[in-house]
Length: 309
Image (cartoon, one colour):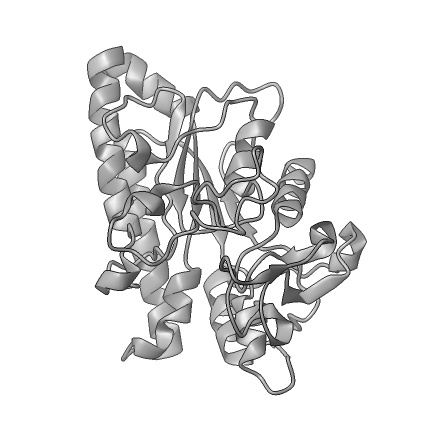
């Protein structure tokens, strides 16, 4: 099994169709996924505890207040939008009746590829199939405003990032399937959603695999040795069909195990809440909280992505 202890990149790009270059014009970005790219949808879910609109999230975001992002500041969706020369796209639930010609973010903290992932009431979220349904509504409005041909051309030039899968893997223990059966089902289910997006008009995809989530502070905390959870990482590896590791110190990250915000061992006994402590040296931490990257980590990933594209 691959050594995940030095794995830095939170995202593994599995497919970047029609790779972006500065010569290309991307009129809009339509983001699908989980908490890694959620820009505030979950704060509009009345029953969900999977929210980030409380301190100390957002401490480094312009204004210094929580926005619903699971980060100390901006996340990868924000930096991707900036790289494309677009303005920050809103969360879908913040204005669900908009046309979203410039794009929109459907991502939801805790969401999975499967509807059953985190489906209990206190973990209310927006699973990927529902996100696809929301996009279908947006597509209808685009056709109404732009006309069928113009809407199709618009979508064919737009970018569709899909960042999801970690929550499904974390919830694998609830499944009756073997690990490989579970992973195969994840892959086939994701492909169906991508086919659905393609059928509606999407052509440029940025499909992203899962990180070695067994190395997240929460998983390390559950180990007596503070090491990665090999079983969970094995699932991630199988899902991604081979990961490429990189040394985090190359990018200036000195703290790769502990969270920045939290309490207790590895700042992971208590998650990031208003009563938690947060570090002053956030730029050298890979993790902001028990699962999510710092703003610096997210920014570094996008820089690496575009330097390789």
